Length: 167
Ligand code: FES
Image: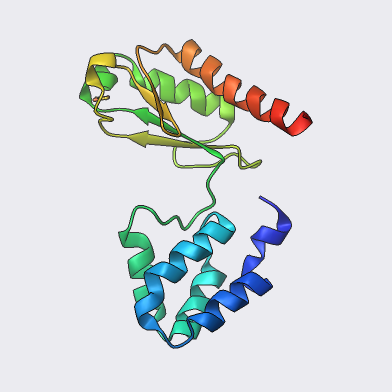
């Protein structure tokens, strides 16, 4: 994510958004959505500016931002990897897959790589127990994984991104 986006709460687009919805507490969810579209997540300075502009208590802004799973208070990677540790996946090696990906990416579950390419998450059942162990990368489900296969798949995403960047 660019430095410009990092400081989007100082940008003209963000100021316009707040001006359009000034004193409109009922627009809170819409403003949170548009802010996340601008920035990729909802940093604290942006939430404070929203609270002030819409005249909504900051605690309520946080309450809404943390209640809905669509909102993210931390930066997320371009790709979100969800490794299933539900019962079926756990008994078939889900933990080893998570550990291996964690080693290769250099981040713990719940974290994002410093280059913002990958976020690694542990999740409960992904609804594909017959394919366990399972992970999802973005919206794609991969089943019957080994730790090595999981790493290969993630590296393919990284390689594809590099190709796009070079072209
Ligand atoms: S337990 Fe992993 S998909 Fe159901």
